[in-house]
Length: 282
Ligand SMILES: [Zn+2]
Image (cartoon, rainbow, N blue to C red):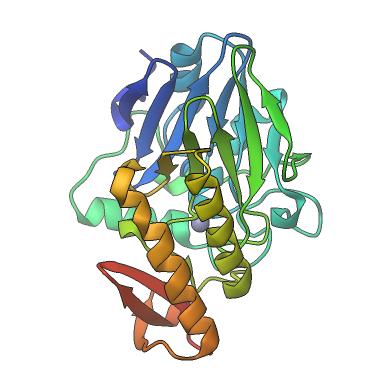
């Protein structure tokens, strides 16, 4: 046990995979291999994630970031000694991974989280100082690209470039287990967040087409994302619905509704219980 174990909600999904939730909403995954282990994403950076995953994994841990958004890089700097991987298109102009790396839209997120967490009457873990809470940058991340193989000993994973939510968004495919670690490719409530800076609807539609091909060829049957429970079986039909609706939006024939979000106005499209959020200008 480390001192912030109680902060995380840890679910053992299979012999080698853990789903780790921080702050009730921010997910990351640990995949344990015989030689190395892979942590996919690093949460919002309040708990001692490094201590937690070191206890679970049993082999040295590499961190891969699916993308640069604040709720995926929180604890990344604490893994810098062992290498932190990210697609170069999600690094800032200075090559770093940082809270303000590619835009200012996430700079206020840590403070907002603290405010909302307190307002709901929740506690922080012992030893955490909300007033000093910040997300440290990773100065020299390692670049990853589509097709890169991640050797963990008894398992080999594969990087799949999945742009749309961000330019350098990647997923990680475990063909043997039939699992795709998909980051934010599908966002909260099985929807799409395409209203942030750097989101690209055309790239997003092509990403869904590729994921549908991978699913249909049997490369994966379970999609593990940061903000949803595991999606498996018929729940993966959501890929087809979202791809089709993105095409309708691109064609200008979808009906959206203007809504207010934490990031300003956006257009919202409903698809069988999922929502797609896009830039209001479209
Ligand atoms: Zn994101």
